Length: 156
Image (spheres, rainbow, N blue to C red):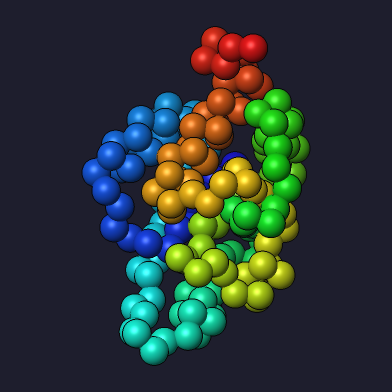
């Protein structure tokens, strides 16, 4: 199974890249993890965020493969405990489809992207900066893998 993160926002602070890298370097090789980024659409003072969301949505949809299972990180999504995520990860691996997590732009994602998603996942009820969401996602995926394999990283 290939896992990738497709995220709007190509420039992140160095601490985000460092923390994100800390966890993704620990991922199992068979995941063949990859980060793909899409530049944030520029917004002018009079620009409506809906236009930017729709433009970014088109870019996101163009980068999704038809057979990929898409998990959209969205504040309205389902929240999970780490153990639940570990079980979901097993289900996703047995599904044998490639997996793509999506983080939208600063205004969210278009309705078309939301409809394309196979699942909406909320990392928290808090509003998170995009960089923090990347780090949290990578840490939770690593934690889910460690739970599944019995690695001592996760302690109950």
